[in-house]
Image 1 (cartoon, each protein chain N blue to C red):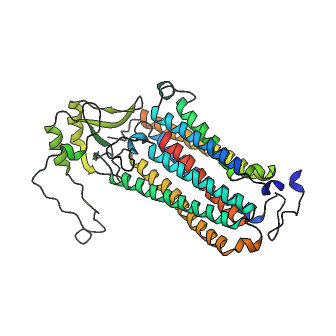
Image 2: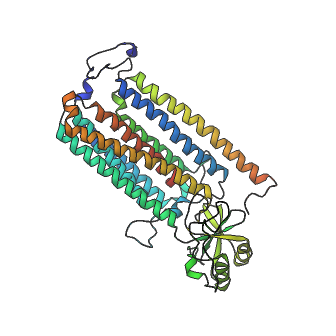
Image 3: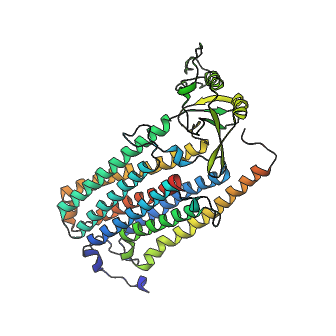
Length: 322
Length: 116
């Protein structure tokens, strides 16, 4: 019944609140967020689809994201993403404080909180860039077979071994294929540090190294026996270092594709959110909303900023936790 | 709509506290992975995963209700946002996850070797 009663006491902006009790701009921001939320749900559900489809060979996120700034070689799963989550939640808090100060028409306070929000946004973007850098660069390297399986290397205890630790240097040369020498758009951006032959020779010479397959049993990847490993390595076709859209040393290629796509799309939202926040921040400084007598604009960009935080909460769960 | 003009600072910090505690619990559970929760299965997923999903929904509730201030909006407005979201996301997840699981079984039991 409440929906049919229209009040005008809040009509600070043109149009005033409609039957839903929200002004036009705020309502449209909400409906934009609704549609954007469904877009992200589509991405995450597609991630779930691929994961369920390849449930036995999907990479374990804990083993992929193990870096923390200034802690080299320390296995630190989750800490970094947790930190990123806190940064985003905290910048959400400063945003909501800015909105709250706006309700009391306190210009300086709004400006300070907006500035803190912007700084938080930039820190988050920087963190994400660092995360991407580590993911793209890779850590241990792996072999890829003709069929697309990824073969990783472990020692007796099951600890990962980097290719550089055992690959033999053979007297061979391979030149990078550049566009001017290739035919019809052939080329490559870089060549791996080792060739398949070098890794294979090194593997044969080191009896303490085993191949870890992509298959999961009891939530652990299966490590092959030495005999199986020697047989398996014959199928290797590429050396993979790091991850891109076509190859992925951490396991299934789709994992890297979804990682780039979903966190990239989210990062793009954070970036546009920061840009919009900056515009509103300058408007606050110029006194635009002071003169208008309403800080509703801050509230509207606040909604968008909280939405970005909301999406990250789900990305965090479905990419890193579950 | 008097609610819009009273200060909510206390509520904001409380919600921040709740969100931080939930995230910390998630991270601790994610690192420790207690055997009893991680290796068992309940309704098709490990209890640990269910805990993560439920905690995420609790966080989403606090962000939307407190930070995005849905608690101060009219019930009809709230419903027009949350209703489509809940219905469509549940439907989308149901149909895609069931299908993904089906394809997994096709690959597993079929005669085609798909990864080698």
